Image (cartoon, rainbow over all chains, first blue to last red; front, top):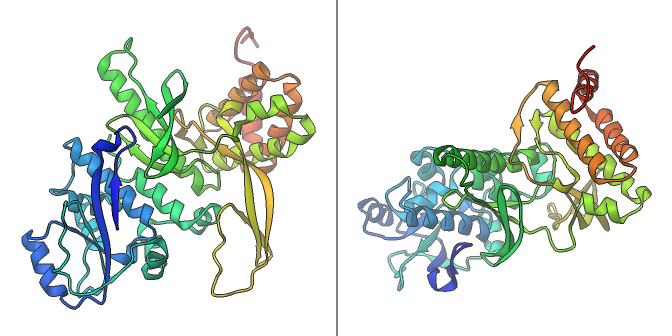
Amino acid sequence: MTHEICDWNETKNESSKITIKFFSKINNAENIFSLVKKGEIEKCFINPETIISEEHLLMATIRARRNQKNNSMKTRTIESEILWCLSPYKGVGMAFKHFGLQENFTEAIVLSFEEQPDFSVIQGEELAFNDSILQKHSNVDKIKDIYQISEDEIQLTSLKESVIMKMSVNNLRL
Amino acid sequence: MELISQGAEAKIYRTTFLGKPVIVKQRFKKKYRHPQLDSRLITRRLVQEARSLVKARKFSVLTPILYQVDVFNHSLIMEDLGKSTVTLKHYLNNNQQGQATPLLKEFGELISKMHNSDLIHGDLTTSNVMVKKMILKKKKENEKEIEKEIEIEKEKEQEIEIEEIEKEKLVMIDFGLSFSSTNPEEKSVDLYVLERAFLSTHPNSKQLFDIVLKSYFENSNNKKKIMTRLEKVRRRGRKRSMVG
């Protein structure tokens, strides 16, 4: 699915186009891994276990984009910055560990800022990228653990909201 | 994008963000301040407010959802609570005391929840509490009644009895001056600020504040100390003699 995202103080002309796809039953994980390590794929690969909703990923994406626009990224590329923005930890390593590609992964959410993104390198089944698919493939216990969300917080509103709020104040650099 | 109000420190805009209606609170520079000091102050207030908005929820205090913190523009992007949501101040001026009583009790409860977890709001006034009409879905789980605004997830195809009720709930805002403290002095000052706010904005304020205070002490973990402190703080203040 494609999105035109722009920040609160930008006009529609300044928006960026992003394409997000959900792949399941991936059988060439090793190949993708090596390409990503070599830096030959300009896409962000995200562990679907850790994403609870579209909004969740979009919030991190727009923050990463804002950091890039202000020359204030903690990581080297916008793709890795998205992973860092998803993460509640200061360290980049932890962000990659939890939210990035896992060993022998079979599922991945792939995000691209390219005008004409080519996803052919990924050999797998494409599913729709929407909230219901995300809920089915996410690991709620893992998310609660990574973001350290207590049952009380979830009772107040919902897990979706708690995750967004935790993310918004993470790694706030004064 | 619409500018809906301007306070002493920030401008409030209403706009859309990622397709949702949001409120943006943007702190602006004060030209009369030393630039370096000013920059540090607004960043600190921004970060404190952001952190407290999230922290308060841990203590079961409703706050608007914080979507983003735009540090580059000193702005907070938050949930738009809706045009029908009003401040408690407005509510009290437009409703009978009888109708407002449950909300005032809830207010006392909310402040005690924050203070019990050592979160000092710093700017307690009736303009910093919003009254939002919510349609809550009520379900009974292990004999506990849970009321939530959103869809209650059906746990593993269980037949849960869900009842829909319309209720007014309080949402705390404006945590710019908030901080953490275990000190009963800070907590009593927090309450005193509210007492003065009530006095200056509402008629029959003593009755209203008493309801809040009673509810506060009913839920407080440190009733005795804070009560005595509050008495001491009351004896200070303007035009009061400190002579024993």
